[in-house]
Image (cartoon, rainbow, N blue to C red; front, side):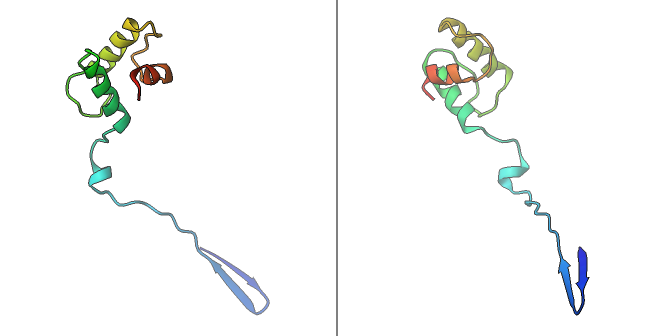
Length: 89
């Protein structure tokens, strides 16, 4: 809080910080819809990423790398733009 005075007038300036409360959406691990779509696309194309959980776990990374290699993409194990395009997501 800051107080400014000029003659007869006093101005009080308040600063507020907004903090979102923890909810069911923010309290637990986040499910990434794009990763979930990639997991489904990988599974549909014969590269089973395991549990469809929307998380970039070791199995999903391995299947991304496997898919990238099979499709002649740069093998990174990451959901990069080229891989997303090839997967159709």
